[in-house]
Length: 363
Image (tube, one colour):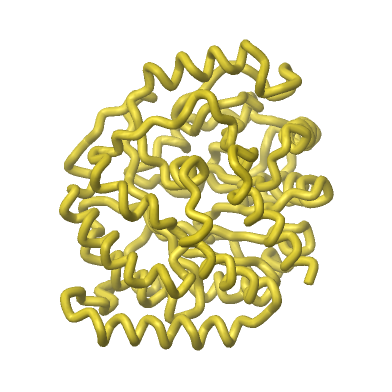
């Protein structure tokens, strides 16, 4: 029941107009992988990253500003490599998650899943982690099945899991089969379009960003799955993304529904548009220093279409009611019922929609 109340509080942030919704804490840039579309590990500098105590202070400040949801990301926040204090990134993440949970925040972690096992998932649950985003980076069936197995274990530990894919031109043919396969296991599936950066500047490599036609085909099909509640990506993103090609959207500089905190404790517009303003140096997001800096940076940024940022600014409470219900059922431990529902819906759509090949094409 406690998990359900926490989940309801999290969902409520997306109903209130202009409420502080999501704070992303990039706890470390260390990562054990080198994905072609991710520049984060190349910027890793352990000497500049927050200590455990500093991260707790930052979380406390973010909580005072009204943010109810904390998403801890990396790099790989669950890696066992040591930071400058001799504390592993994994332990740092657990300390941060526990502190945020005590402060009344709904805590989510994004991970590649490489370090996850049942013991760690149990510790994460005990620390107050309530959501887990597992990023699929290797498009092989064995890799997907491994993530699904870990997601199911997370679900059994009281953590709401989601398998997430970055949508590129090259993986277009796989996504719909993956989405159907994932929901058939009673798990959430999310997708966001590839964002391309070079030395911090937008380059809009249209050979990596899926074409408008590819986006329309995949997202229209995903809309068929959306009513079952197991597609996490919201309808606004699915509908509007192809019209914004290539990732041509700006966030609103006058709203503070989302914020990004860098590993150094900097307050940023997003993961690519960063400042040197420290979270602990300002008392309010209404301070002129932050507002003017944010406005100027957004004015000159190269645009993007980050799924989390876009959805935080463009929530769809009505369309996400089924997802809210599914999340509530997971929070109540109704895993088998959710799994049967997902399997039935996946088979229904496969039989009804002959224009789409819903089979899993991974080898």
